[in-house]
Image (cartoon, rainbow, N blue to C red):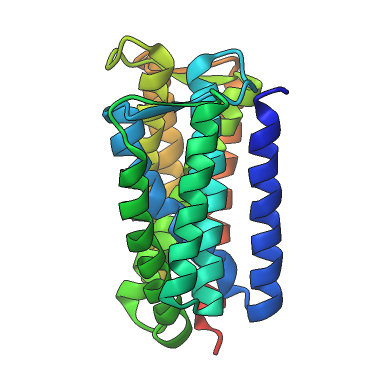
Length: 276
């Protein structure tokens, strides 16, 4: 059986969890919750997966082993874990149900190890068991804040910041992994793609601060246009410094268009948070 089959099963389960959550809540803020939770996990994964090399996924999708690794991590930490968090928050599941779900994740992790579609280095399954309840509790708390205190500046800033990390980091990953038209060349690790992923993640972490701040503070169009211009200029500078590789100048235009899209998406999410 090809490795990717079990990852497709996880994506199917993720879809079911989202549909059930949407039917229960029927609230557009649910999408913000999901993106926010995924963004918070991206920070966690940046440290333990990219920097500390805790484990490795082997879905067998991409020829580049590190792109393949990150795809597997994205299935786990970009879909199944945050959507399980959303499901728990929306249905306000009890401790007993949370323990059951954690046990399911433990079983999945051990199964992946047995099937050789996932490898552990210094990471242990018990660490997963201990970290998941923290993530689930955070999800419940954020869902409460989004529903009842979304008028607070810090709530909007935090949720839009982490949501933008998910959007921007995912775009940079798939745009480079699938199409191969951009690549950040930094000599931080023995594996060049690992350095690319680390730089792209840090780029998203920092850039998202400015995007979220301008949207939440309802800055004028001039400031928003200035942000896009600065982003475009930075991409050109990274290209000139041989940090950013692009297959053609048109790619720089796509990156600027993507950054403009991030801004409009966050503006829309801001309006959603303003709804009663």
